Amino acid sequence: MATQCSPSIFLRFKVIIPLLCLLSIGDMSCSAKSNSKTSNGLQYGFYKHSCPRAELIVHQGVRKAVVEEARMAASLLRLHFHDCFVQGCDGSLLLKTVSGVIESEQEAAPNLNSVRGFDVIDSIKAALESECPGVVSCADILAMAARDSIAVGGGPQYSVLLGRLDSRTANKALANKNLPGFNFNVSDLVASFANVGLSAQDMVALSGGHTIGKAGCDKFAERLTPNSDDPAPLDSSYRKYLSQLCPDGANTETDVNLDVKTPIRFDNAYYSNLLKNRGLLHSDQVLYSTPGFSHDQVLRYAHSNQAWFSDFVRSMTKMGSLDPITAYDQGEIRKNCGYIN
Ligand code: HEM
Ligand SMILES: *[C@@H]1O[C@H](CO)[C@@H](O)[C@H](O)[C@H]1NC(C)=O
Image (tube, rainbow, N blue to C red):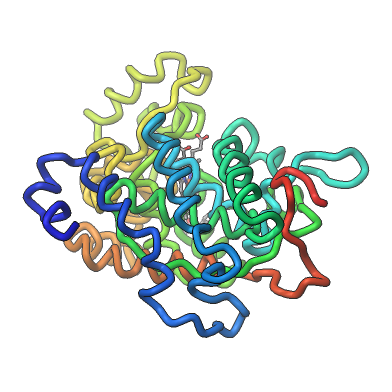
């Protein structure tokens, strides 16, 4: 496997080889790190005995979905983020509306007609239920699927902390409150991450998740009209290119790559784009265009993929550890990710 992953071949077969490399990581997470519990009760290799093939099954499900549609890697990564920012990483995002019981977070503004990938999570869950019924939580599936989605695009490979239980509640109002908006400035972004216990550094590192995936024209249409008051204006040739992709502005139902340079590669081109004023969302470009800490971090990550990878993994692990449920009287292993048991 080591030779197949060597840089030269890696560059020749940009997407295929990382997919092959992934075949070998099935048991990595069980052997790479010790299984001792962290302070919040999560641990590496949590399913080692209770469902030894759990991580492999998730990995295979992600790989199959991404082969069918490259964008799915991005969609799955985003699900974990939107889950963790709302009452912690507890699978609350996955719950569907049940009148009088659950108001789905999927209907909150940042999620509505935007988050996707639920069918993939459901099919992975079905495979896990047939292998080891009632063992693997939906919240953990999101964390594993995010990890595998990062690796599948050539991003950093890492062991993922597991052992989360699923919530019996969802909170649509909290989703509206906690999820950051695409029109946010740097201080709004810092505050939004601080609100869930993440630092400004986590915010800049995690924003690099926008190295894959797409955003609808309505999320950046305002930026297509040049505005001298805009603190983070677009490069004019990029703006013209985007205007062609969104001829009816916000009413165009097109999704546009967040990373114009390498849209399905998990690399630091997100940051080097910002240096050229080619950040698609306002919330992306402000990181560089606003002088200060975020600007300096963007420069650092643009210049070193390694620096970004290592910070990104650390921040993903931090985000994945937000408020997990680990006490059985507080949560459950859902049978169906969309509904409480
Ligand atoms: C920093 C604040 C953030 C803001 C304001 C933000 C906002 C957005 C918006 C508006 C979209 C496009 C949605 C649509 O058009 O339907 C999007 C997509 C995406 N976001 Fe973020 N996001 C942020 C942070 C993050 C983080 C921390 C991650 C993961 C680590 C992430 C991962 C993604 C991915 C992968 C997509 C593409 C999804 C797809 O193609 O299905 N974002 N984000
Ligand atoms: C950021 O935006 C908020 C409104 O969302 C505003 O109150 C604040 O003054 C802005 N901060 C900067 C530095 O522009």
